[in-house]
Image 1 (spheres, rainbow, N blue to C red):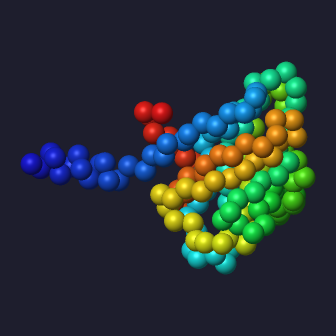
Image 2 (cartoon, rainbow, N blue to C red; image 1 turned 30 degrees about the vertical axis):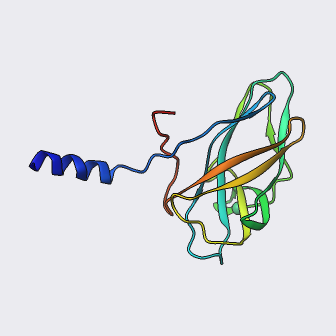
Length: 156
Ligand SMILES: [Cu+2]
């Protein structure tokens, strides 16, 4: 009985794994699409993912859109003289044969004007527009407010 309680406690303490679904169009594969829970809608939400280009031609992510934000944008975090800033990124290059990561501290999606609060465990659609591959709609999974990376469900 005591052992069962310990096992249950371990299960509860483990970070919640998400499905980390994979989305593909042409040579482009997108996975580990995630966001963070928000407190209300005052501050922008974030969006991270991995984009893999298995083709022979370079591509680039040029815009994102989602029903949960009025003004989603692409940003790049840069640090100059120890000061971090987030300039708007016109395009996120996805070179042939490479994987590009949108992650905390690098390129990221910034969901300005959230239309609803992002709740942990929820998911929302995001349409990515790629220069060559065109549009691809993916599903972002909302992790905890302090998540730094997704824990993918091993079953996937
Ligand atoms: Cu930003």
